[in-house]
Amino acid sequence: MIQDLVTFASVIIAAAIASQAALTAWRRQQRREVYGAFIAATDDALESLDVLLAEHADARLADLDQWEEFHQARHKFDIAWGQVRLVAPANVADRARKTGFALLDFDRGVKNLSVGQARDLRKDNPHLSWELAESFVTAARRDLKVEPRIAAIWRWR
Image (cartoon, rainbow, N blue to C red; front, side, top):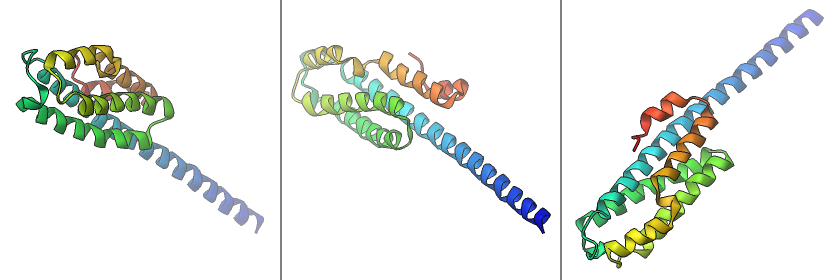
């Protein structure tokens, strides 16, 4: 009887450990997918911003065809940003938050400005730069501790 009880307890403990390991692996996979989507969305948003700001300096942003492309890329970014906030640890989520609010503020505040004025605003906000976007990749790598898979997603500049 005692042997049966010990065996039963051992099976329950082993099942709990296996369940916890499976849950941890699932969470890591979820973060990996979310980080990949966020990195791709950041890349698209910053690239569309580069294209938008490559126009003639006197042109008004709202009049450019590329404005809508930037706006759509930023909307896709917002979706990925929301997912990062749900699954990432605080330090990684904070990096995403800063980029997210920078893109949101830029989208809301520059539509009626000239391209030249928008370029100046972008220069003044480090969270709209490729360097800080790459720092998110570094933080995500540290979180996942698997550098090659995340690096393959990012289109390095």
